[in-house]
Length: 137
Image (cartoon, rainbow, N blue to C red):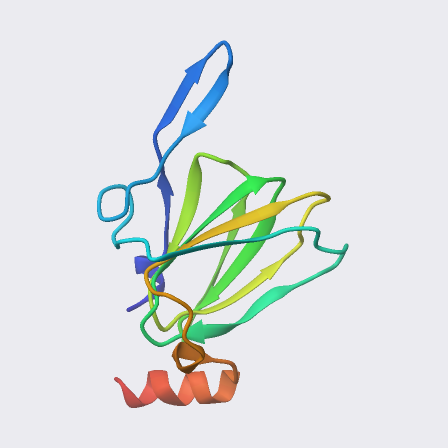
């Protein structure tokens, strides 16, 4: 996988006078089936999250409220994304280091994941991540 595989995906947005509705179907709007949903909220000012990679997990991150930045690193290059829309999200394939920063007040980061939680899927040490990336080349 490379940084070009990380991309912003627009999801359907139905608008009427009562407000907007968006929906996501796994395997249709995003390139994986959804097995887990979680969200980050009540984040203190200046908080950062992430700082890890996943061996096999695919993720789709949405700013359900507010905004935040996601920095993606494939072990060779780095790319930044600013998420601030409830009808767009960032697709992150496996083996991408991610850092989430610059959360606005009352922001909510909604994450759809391809697998249930498994601590063994996490790489929490950046040097180990880079070693794994280089050994797979």
